[in-house]
Picture 1 (cartoon, rainbow, N blue to C red):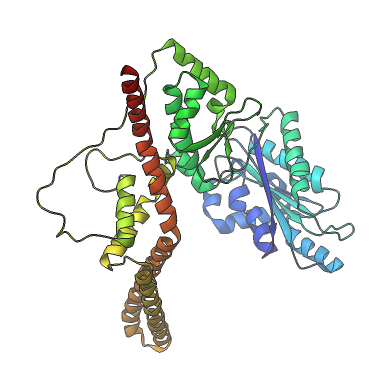
Picture 2 (cartoon, helix red, strand yellow):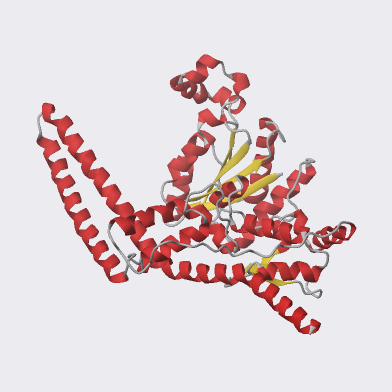
Length: 457
């Protein structure tokens, strides 16, 4: 299974060529001793030997000499007067761990580069073996050495050439291929899902699994999902069933959540429940407490502080107790990933007695003026350090670090203030949705009890 990607290089061509040809990443350990690998100077000298380079390193130049690739690519640009814009293109082809050897990986990379760019462009192919997944890097000159035309990196070139040819070569070599590749998942979301954090898709999966467990029909399954705050479309005439949070502009196909969430698999999982006695959801019980004294004398919390306190209560962050409250709506459960930020924002609001937008804006202006003063002080410290005697440098560095820490703290507070301004309406909407879902089953239960009493009469 080979994954591919390509992107333009606009800043520095030599940097990319040097990275691709990094001898510490492309060196074949079978031809190096530990002593040689430990000495960078020895490695570079050893790699400079033209009679050994092709054998020792997985680096190949196509239409150029790999050790002179930067110079040749630059000359091509000057020849046709096209030294601006995209300087080159950087691509990679990565394989699963232990699927191919470094030698085979490099052979496949060279063949791929020749098929796509070999007749018109200068290309450096290097195989990096310093990670668990051996992978090829391609540095392609953006200007053709044949006629000076620039390479057009568009949707058709990637999906029509790079990915297609890479898959064809993998099939010819008996390697696995991703048959239906989807949209790549951002790195932070991928890591969060891997660690089981409450991301969008993880919340959906958990709710779907729970609703399937308590359903014996598709209609009942859909009803449970709606009660939890989802908008669904299970139309039989549609190829894919979809699910979305309330207020979402786009829905998500259930099959995107994984193999266990396609239409057929979900229906099969629901059908298995006929063999067992279904377990229905219990009606939430409202706890009642009796308080001694009077609330008339208690100081009432309002504004942003009340909003954030109630929001953190619904998230289960406060109060701290053994049995934490679990949010009901999927939106609130996703917000649990931000609980550290919300706790910091509550501390900021209470320490500075901020309840209204006017107070918050006033606090922001004060912090902006303070950060300006701190930056001015740090600037003066830097000026003193240029002409200060050596014995005073350490004291000035301490003052500089203190000012930098203060600036860092103020910037963090300004970030929290902006977040409060931007997210206050979203927090109110999530609270309203949480209340709706929390008390909806109880209202339904009360209606059923009323109807039953009327029938008895």
